[in-house]
Image (tube, rainbow, N blue to C red; front, side, top):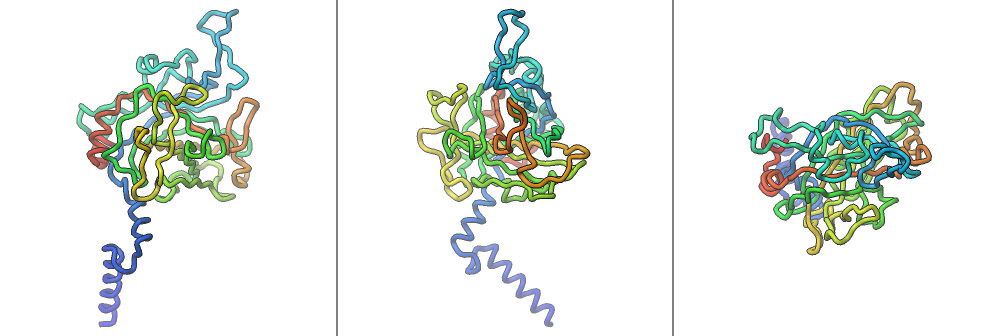
Length: 332
């Protein structure tokens, strides 16, 4: 009898919590809603590494050398090493810097056929995604297969999301390096790979890094970079001609939204996965983590990611995000 009474009491308590009874105050319920909003309304893509080079089709760190044939390019003083995913032409050819040129290239991204989706939703994602080469204690990490998620999480209304323009160029910078704080990316780093928590994955305006000792040799690291999703008008451009985007107002809580003058596009989350090589030494925290700069490795807060969209996502946005069909094979 005592066991039965105990079980009944526990079940009743759980029911109160789940149903939003007196044990969950309004603030707690709002926090739970923020964490669960967007559990539907997303699609993703898987892409293999597409090369490593000094190229950057947004910043364009190469110039034509008039003394050499036009097929040869010379890096400028701003050039630094990047890892690429997606478009297979970008890393190897500095002349590829328009959406038409990207569309003509092959891609390292899956087309969705492996998930058994409708052929009408198969993708040719020739977009390019890249970030500067990361290091731990000066040893270069090795890029692995990476997932790119497009969603309307963090309290956003998925029915207001529209497809990003084909040809869109975005740069997601660390919170210490954006032109404006609202333009900052969210950056969550975890060791070992796969250990990012649900809260870290949820767009909520907060960054996180691994504790000292968490990153060890012969394991993998996840670097999650969440791009801003409120796109300014096309007349508002950044220093390299890229579009300006801002984080949603109230991101991470119910009612998150963009300004009326902005376009709400899918929140892009790039889950970059890297292998940590042998003899990497002790990871002492962010002081051990650096990224490539034009004069060698620079502090980790120079981390950023770039995105050049070469895919029409209208159908995917309408079906997977607006229609909240994230679990459908067409959206995997």
